[in-house]
Every structure is written in C-alpha cells, then in structure tokens.
Image (cartoon, rainbow, N blue to C red; front, side, top):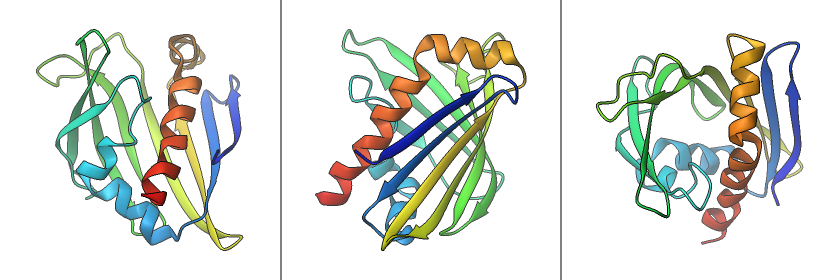
Length: 161
C-alpha cells in the first residue's frame, strides 16, 4: 500500500496524505497528465471516474464525473493553478452540478500534489486546504480520507500493469 500517512489538521483546515511509489516522478506525472490513466485512479474503486476534458496546464479546467454502483453520477471539476512538470501541480478541486457549475454549499479545496525522488522511487505529497474548519469537517464526514486513500492506493496497480 503506497499511502504511508494521512494527517487531517483542523487548525490549518488541511488534509495531508503522503505515499511512496516504486516508480520515477515522470511515470507518476504521466498518470495524472493522461485522462484515461487518471480515470483508473481518481476516486475510490467503487466510484470510477470519467474525465470529459483534462489538461495539466495552468488555467485549464478539467471536468469529470464518478459513477456509483447504483448508476448515480457525482460531478466535479478542477481549475489548474500551477504546473511544474514532473515535480507536481496545484488545482482547485470542487463539487459540481450536472452542468459542471460549482455547487455553492459544497467545499472547494486548494490542492497541491508534489512528487519528489525518494528511496529509488517517488514520494508523493497530497495537500488539500479548505476555506474553513467546517469545510474540512464536512469532507471528512463524507469519507474523504477513505476515498482518497483507496484512490491513491489504486496507483500501484496501474504502475504494475
């Protein structure tokens, strides 16, 4: 299991997940840059993702939906704010309605993914910061720790396949 630590911090409104992969930064970057590969690891296994559009370019907007076992679709978006290939990228990550407009009463995170060479592979650090303690508590109650951990652990299967 690649995830080595999960640290929610209610004082800084952040969630930090660290993982270690037996692959180069460039390989990990390629997974996040390619929407077809990203679909295989974004979200927990029970909610597979479909990206309608996706570019890792500053200013780009990605839209996607995840489909539950009952067929229910859950929509989301990214607004890419920083790109430093292959070292990482940053984006706003939010919930959307079926037309991909942000859902006003749902949290949006400022998210930063960093990839560093470590122990012959890559250490990935995923930091999501929310506007308030309440916003972080809401996503924690929704199961973000379990979902994000399962999603990140999916990467090993893609790297091995």
